[in-house]
View (cartoon, rainbow, N blue to C red):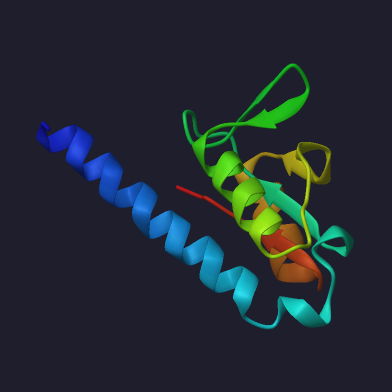
Amino acid sequence: MNAIASFFSLQLKVLGVMVLMTLSQGLHAQALKSLSILTESYPPYNFQDGGQPQGIAVDLLLAASAASNDAVSRSDMKVLPWPRAYKMATDGPGVVLFATT
């Protein structure tokens, strides 16, 4: 495995652990479906294709939420410009901003 592939593999593992930790901490009090789930466009991790969020990070979030028995779907997520998504996450409760650069 070359250095670049090894680096991306490590990044994905860290991202997966962070998603699982986030889902296991305190979110049980609020259903995942009731949250606004936002991300930015950063292919191949998260991007919009055909009006739906796609990418490695999106797939990890879908799998982690399914494992928590409170599954979210692609239609529950929005891909927004970073400044707007960040402002929404810092201004209001119930907003999750995931897989940012």
